[in-house]
Every structure is written in C-alpha cells, then in structure tokens.
Amino acid sequence: MPRTPGDAGPLEVRVPRFVGLMAMDARKRAVERGVRLVAGDRSELDDVVLEYVVRQYPLPEVEVPRGAVVTVWFDLGPDEGEGGAGVREPRLPGPSDGGLQRELAEPGQPEVGVGG
Image (cartoon, rainbow, N blue to C red; front, side):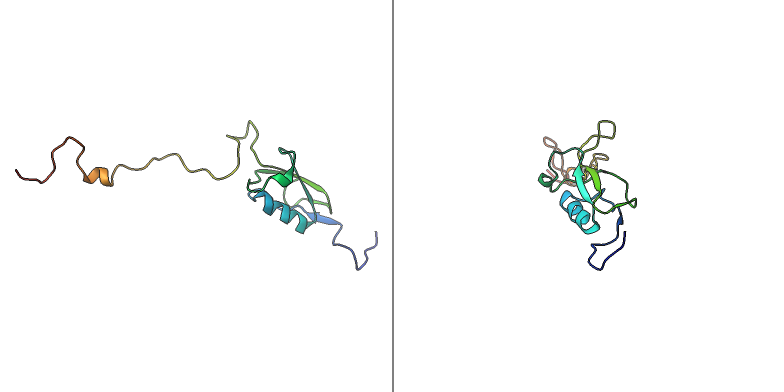
C-alpha cells in the first residue's frame, strides 16, 4: 500500500511494555504507540485508574498492525500468586527488639540505678 505524507505513521508498530504501569499511564502509552487497550479482567478499562498492569498480551516488542488490540490484566490469576496488584510491604523479618523496650525496665520491676 503506498504511503502518503498525511499518514499517521508506520503500518506496523511495536507493542510497548505495559506491565508495571498504572492504568492511566498504560492508556496514555497505548495512544502514543498506536495500539488499543482492553482489560482482560475488567468490564470497563476507563473505570480503572490507579491499579497496576500485571500481565499483557501480546508481549512487549512484538510487531503488530497499527490499531491492534493489546489485552492487559490488573489482577493475578488463581495460579499466579495472591492476586491483586501493587506493592506490598515485606512481612518478614519483623522489627528487632530494642529501642525503648531495651532501655526501660518492664512494669513491676524496680528502677535500675536508683539507690535506696
């Protein structure tokens, strides 16, 4: 197909990496790169704003026709972990013993260093 000066860009585009992006940033990048996003685990992609993309298909750097659909997911599947997106605090190791507990006597114990 011949190209004309008014064309919107190349006929083939590379799929950008959406994993790790928030939904609003993924939508913006999709428009910039010439692909359409759909959510595999949501009915309306426009309702999703602050959740992070955890999977996508096709994979990044695959060449697709301009305007092709890229499916993204915001939750992990049942066999892929706990589900839910985002960063979680580490649960282990817990805080170390110390601080005020180390410096002060336990309730009911006599004060240390007080003469009588």
